[in-house]
Image: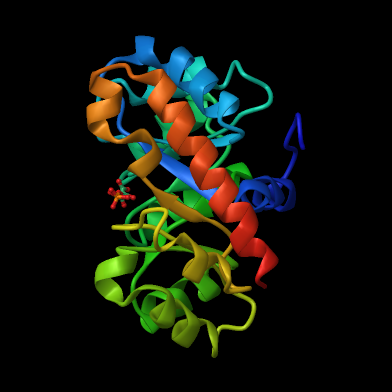
Length: 220
Ligand SMILES: O=C(O)C(=O)C[C@H](O)[C@H](O)COP(=O)(O)O
């Protein structure tokens, strides 16, 4: 349980605590507050709001008002987006690939940044940049948990947030790996649920995922 995150280490601990990063695409920032409450009711205290829509910055600002929720920004492709994310109160930043300018900007601001990495070369770029956690994207098409395990072998200090094509069914295989910090995905916050404002179903899927994640961790 945490109420306030002060540095990179605390942020990673907070993300690792639930083992899940719901990846949200919000069309309307007015939905941010009910969504935050639905996730919290499901037992999750972390969310990634993607810059796939114009509502992202306002949604991050609305969710950042919940002190028990760790709110990050996703799909951050440019320094302009990163700046808006940080101004809105994002406490971590995620990108689909490795963007040196975004990584430098976040590191300079002291905000944890998790760039996407799909190959050993990209992981080595993250090592060069002084990072110790990357998003592994797109996880399922790239080979899933066995691929993470294979990549983790030479990168002993690297932690991974596999994301892309994952649902509850694949969660245990990923979370059984000590190198996996958390698993990201949209299945708890699927676009059809958000469009229908079906917050009860978001809470139900979140609670189910939280339970699977907790069980999977016991296997480590
Ligand atoms: O937007 C980004 O920055 C991305 O890198 C892509 C998302 O993480 C995936 O789209 C996750 O979505 P699912 O595969 O539905 O779980």
